[in-house]
Length: 638
Image (cartoon, rainbow, N blue to C red):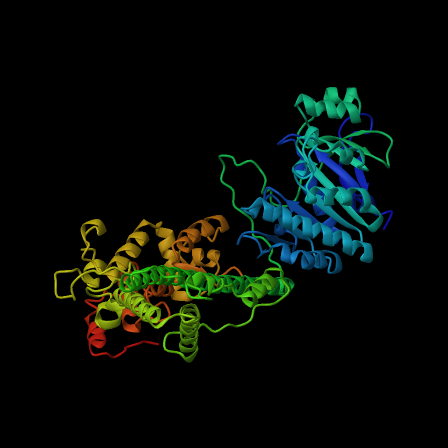
């Protein structure tokens, strides 16, 4: 393999003009290189030509794409495109770093690591750092020639600023990677901003046109002043090529890349994006398993955090009750002492050993150490997510938890109030507790009475408690409030002018307004999702009468996804989500575990769909649900 070469262009000036220029493959794969030039000078084309030549020969590469310019390689090559958004073949995090390095080195899979698709730059840097670490570690064992190409390298190893962990790993690869077979190509349009230790260690360098004075000075220091004087005159794609294996510095015109130029500056002429090759499903199956494991871990963390929050709230509530009991106890002590002093006519001293202050009896309420330990283990990846059933109203688990909390409250109260107190004090304490419990019961009844006594008021077709806001809409449906049919037929008043609208009617009115605001093509795509089931945005775009263009399809699909009308299914496909959206919006805020009435849900979905689906009529009313609720029954649908 040492004698194998790739042809990248031809000499463009001098006596050898027209002579092909070849680069030894092993030096390109395992060496250190720097490609530079101002925007539009041809440096990205040069990098793409190098990638195409390596891919033609079946060698592995990993491209760190900081501007999202290299996906055009998928026009000709089966290359895995991973990053931070849904336009990549797979969305990845630093949890996937080890598997990415394994696919690249052990299975020889070419990879584009698209860090431009991350909204959070720290996530992108963390992923690149971990991938570089795993590549370096694995290369020490497999020792397979492999090339790592990094765009805008000055952002990771700047000349003037500090270097973080990501930059230190890239410098480590440039200094020690060659002995293990790991090469690196750094690309930048500002050589003056790149750490000079990196540039001076490179085996081969490509200098395209530069015009800034600071950049031309770098050319003069490394190549000589005569080259610095001519670097501004270079044509597009033309460069000075300096290599360790050739004595002369040659003026070379690089070839044009074969694949789609995704980094070209947009012009006035329309262009059609080419058909891109897709990678096989088996290739990303293990990466998807990592994503699913990470999602389960994150869900478990969220669940544990919710439990901790609930326990913290319970602790605060107990502390509040304890403080109130302490205050009442002090008042009772002072009152009984004053009464006894009045009767006896002399001041009283405290009884021996008496603890009159409640806070001296009851110790501090502690957090749950087992729950906090499990949360910390999940966060550190030491424990996987376990299924944890959530108790619902009326279940044995819920009753047991409630009884346990009541027992805890009673124990604290008894311990605090019975230690060494006299009959007079005990009587005072009993009266204080009775007042506290009565106040608590009154608060509880005030908060829950609307939902506990009037089942019919929960319907969306008439007045009562609004499930969306939790407020009393007033009345029982016998007034002149608009029905779902009124809203669906466009006769609803403005929400600000119609406080009598029920929750369901306001929901229908809002969703239909959001549908009206969509582009026509987005609405057609929504019909396609409803009719055909899960599909990719391009497929939905074509089914809606569009061209299937990826950019246009995702633009329209984003409108639907942001409003909740469609949801991600799997492997780039989306599905119709209006019924799920209506179900989420109509959950009882005071009883979120209670399923939404099936008939009522179907009527609301039908009312919204009647605005954009032919053949679906708006329902006349939801009185049927009201009748069922009034009779105390339950009506549901499959």
